[in-house]
Amino acid sequence: MKNLWIIANWKSNKTISEALDWISLVGPKIPKKDNLKVVVCPTFVAIEEVAKTIKVSNFPLLVGSQDLSPYDEGSFTGEEAAEILKQFVQISILGHSERRQNFKETDKQVEEKVSQALTHNITPLVCVQGVDTPVPTSCKLVAYEPIFAIGTGNPDTPENASNVAKSLKEKYGSELEVLYGGSVNSENVKAFIEKESINGVLIGKSSLDGEEFVKIIDTILAWIT
Image 1 (cartoon, rainbow, N blue to C red):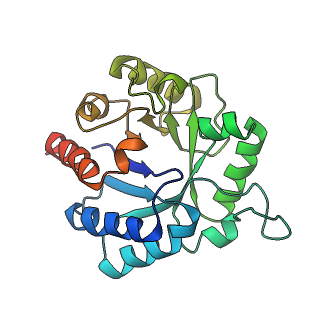
Image 2 (cartoon, helix red, strand yellow; image 1 turned 90 degrees about the horizontal axis):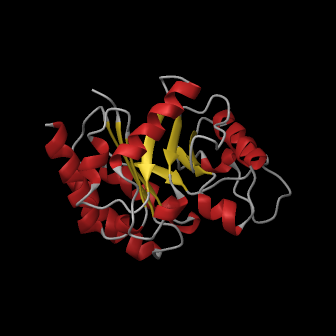
């Protein structure tokens, strides 16, 4: 069976205390399944404590960052280098549409960040807005996030998302894993993950509510079992 990724992107939300409460609620409810990859991407300030709690509790959760630096460790004020982040994270979200829009992040910068991630054994999850958004070489995990669906409550149709995923796999290789992101919740998630070409979901707003996130996991588990 295909891998199924369920990735929580908290964006700029949650104090450390709130983050640990979420982990305490969600962690015990995630079963250990080889093809189920559940990831939480907290704020930078919460990453270390989240990672420690997951490790101590032996929860089947991976930790991701919401970004990383295109530069090596060194004199780059305000940047978080992959060489440092690799202590705590296994995955990094790169090229999110909010970073492209709000910080004018370019395809070249995304490519440089992917290179840094791969150099330090962090899996890059590159966000694309469609088939015309380039996927850097050696990147094997992407999330299709149409801009009109981000935080609007108006997701793309599962059929169109599936077609985009198919097109991306045809363009970059069948080994590419494609997630869908954009207004995903417990009511619509099954319609996306049951599409053969879609390998999971990247969840923003709905991931902030631990109980809703558990509902999403339970919906996916019900489908795969």
